[in-house]
Amino acid sequence: ASDVYKRQHLKQREFRAARRAFQRAIRVHPREAAGHIGLGLAQVGLQEWEKAVDSFASALKHDDTNRTAYRNLAYLYLTEKSVRDVVERQLESLVAVASPEAGERFRRFIAFLSRLRSTPVKEFDAVFQQFEIGSQP
Image (cartoon, rainbow, N blue to C red; front, side, top):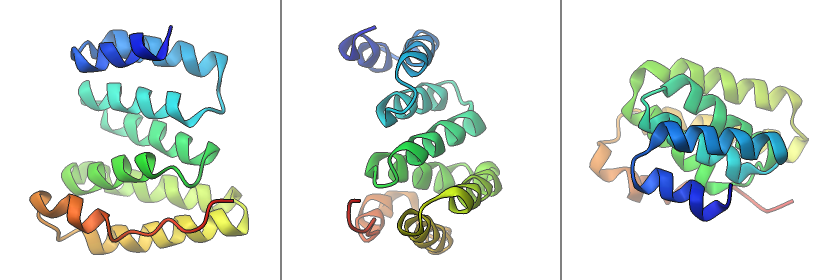
């Protein structure tokens, strides 16, 4: 499915159709972060919080500088307290297999998340702007 078609499902809140479309895209292009992010957004729409965390973490596995994946993980971490442990475990598992540079990015993000815990949701955008991913590889 084309990118426009997949995005249209998300815009129209057709989350099941979007999930199927992004799953097909990932089968064809498993290393493209955008497919994993799109799948994660569809899963958020379906309130599949833990699956969404897995999808955003998969995006970071393939592109450890992807600001959209970091932002979505941070927002879930802040708003869905039930997935905080899942987010932390996923990031720790990424640290274990990452290059030194990527591992350092993931560790900085974990530290950032601990500071994010007490942030009011309405201040999320301003606070997230303070997170520096670091240099591109």
